[in-house]
Length: 352
Image (cartoon, rainbow, N blue to C red; front, top):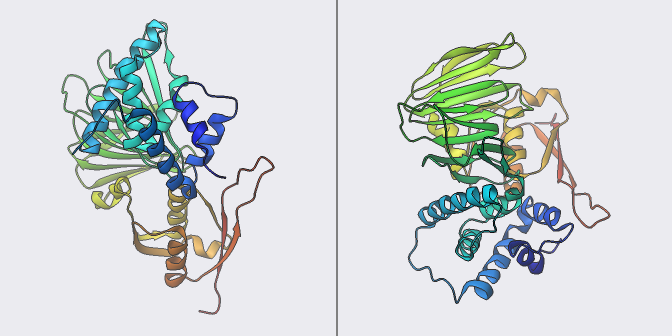
């Protein structure tokens, strides 16, 4: 579907119409539309902001961090006081749209879902669609990256004795040190406690195993066993805790943390991982549906590194290094003009 500039413009201007949100999500979930999205955002920049702001020689990541921090402060005030954000914040959010499309669109889509509790604590929820990675900046200055198909919920201001966030999916955290206020990542079945460190949490609700990997510092890992939260162990750098949700068993193994967290830089590194795990990550990375049709393939060990390869290049590499035959079913077009995920089936190749 062709990306419509006018829909993007009215959404960012706060004049959305019925169906606009769904169309934005559809475009943003498709790698094929990424180039068109970026083109239309720059068009929006040129037409709406050229007389208001000039950015020269900026560091996109630093500018984005400042913008996001300011947006969150203003969001907190506007939700509690029920006021519309100021013109300055409107401009800042549009700048964010140009600097980092994934974050900007998600911010506008999820701004509607911010909740103020009875004790005036305001929560924000960020969702990163499949096929994307989203940088985030938390109220205490901690930061990180949210992987595709993941949701992160956090207060706009950390109150009380801890800094707690809720995660469904996968995220990398770079936590600022605060010995008096531990940082807690809470999933459906695990909790990770840190004071100041860098670590990765993989806890997708549909997965059978949660994985916590430590890059720097030290973290304590807890898991749900017999209806209560129990300590699973304390990690040191280059260690991973695997927690099996089916039998509540856990183990700590030695890993190369740099390989595990490489996804946040756009890399997928596989070191003799079973093909079933490889396919699961490729599906999330490319927002597609690769289906293994032969059980023999699931345990096949795979060794590879993917970075800038297109999906077709990745599929070709798979067939060169594993006994695979590919059947590409393409994408089904829906009556409303949108497309479903591309489906690719993998079969065991018997004539190798």
